[in-house]
Length: 467
Image 1 (spheres, rainbow, N blue to C red):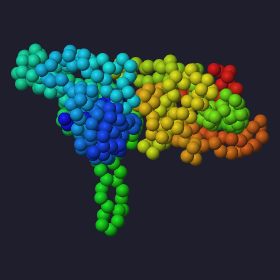
Image 2 (image 1 turned 30 degrees about the vertical axis):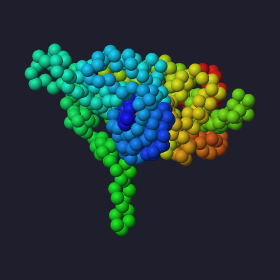
Image 3 (image 1 turned 120 degrees about the vertical axis):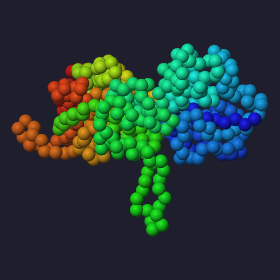
Image 4 (image 1 turned 90 degrees about the vertical axis):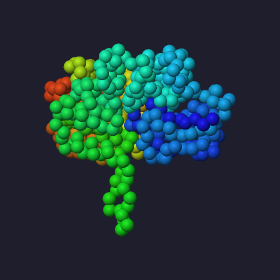
């Protein structure tokens, strides 16, 4: 019996993924849950296990291809005995939805199914689901069987089933995020994209937002599908397909820049005492085996500033016209990796000791650079630090992580002339840059937060006094 394994929704609400590398080839013998392929989504690298035991017949998609959720990617020849023990296929259309709900098995995909997330919601009329996996938002509703048309649709001659209120608008996650930020109801839009999907331009048009030059550049970047072949005389240009993390980051940064009014303030700080504290802390037994850097003190100072000024750790809810102040801190740390810029976050950073924070920062950085950050690691941040100093840069104007009100840039630490007690001296000096959403944070609050962080780095004892 031949079975096709379709690309599943790995629990991130995404509509597509890139095939990075196959771990099997035609003729290989598979066991259930054996890793068969590594895919790259807009957020992370994910290893997919096989739901079948059998022999690989064909690889249906090449490495490097971008594939929509629900597309068959591998064909497996299974025996009847193995098929009985594999993940069950979708029941026939004539079977009631309740029976499908009771017999469906959870599928081990990527990083697993979250506790409590395996209960299927009642099936909506006219919606089909590919294979044995939860339906992706990218699949349009299919016509209902004869006689099962909803009363509302049946009463309107010529009604189009996919546009019924029960169907979810077809749009990719960056488009949904832009719609949420601009306060646009996707279900009310007629999409102009492939298969009637809603595009960025549909959302901007509905919001009455003009299309700026940067938005045009981002839109064009997202449409690049493949690299061009070199010319006979040599390649004078290189075209790099925009996929995965880079594609997601580009869309998020454009959405952030065109949604939140950015303001950036700068402050030069004498961090001589902080550097001395770093050296002393490294010798403490509590920090044995843990990397201690100035970033640890910057992070601790930011957490203390958030406790003193909670509004800096908030977000803007456009739909509800509310400011959401977070009473917890998931501290995002921008990390440059081979896959592009990643911003994993330390969950519950406000509850960690200094030693615990040091360990969490090191683990998060190593995991992200190795490309092993999970979707959970890369979501849910409330405020971010970007350490541009490691690249030898003094300062910058960082763009907000979407959904956050502030981001702190930490520049290079240099020996510079500084006036101390009326005398010129050589001190360790850095520049801090704080960008913030001016809808939430005014100049007074932004300045107070930046000033407090600077004061704590000038004299780390203030972190103890203000904590």
